[in-house]
Amino acid sequence: MDKKILKWLYDVKVSIDEINSYFIDERMDFFEYRKNLMRKRAVERNLEIIGEAINRILKIDNSYTSKITDATAIVGLRNQVIHAYDNISDETIWAILTNHLPKLKIEIEKLLKGN
Image (cartoon, rainbow, N blue to C red):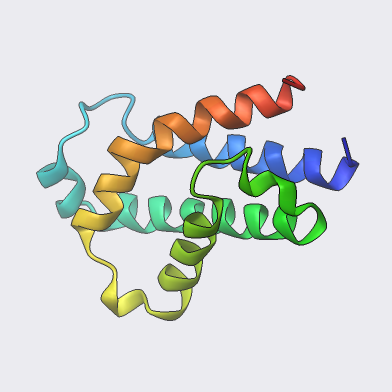
């Protein structure tokens, strides 16, 4: 595997782990998340990093679109968070955290193990 791709996959893993760490001492509760501006911004920043890393991976090797579910949607979310930040809803981010991030974590860990 290309060393740059390996580094970016690791960046995705670190960002997912950081997001998960924000909820270690609390159960994942949407209404608590919504009230905590610092946590929301930290989550959004990590989603930007994830999207940028996947964008870079796809530019080098487009075959990762079949290895990472919704890879292009992840890049699209990154662009939306950065460029259309005023149109991002807490509900959208929460749905990503609860429905999509766990699957992405599994896929990234599998790719890092070389499977």
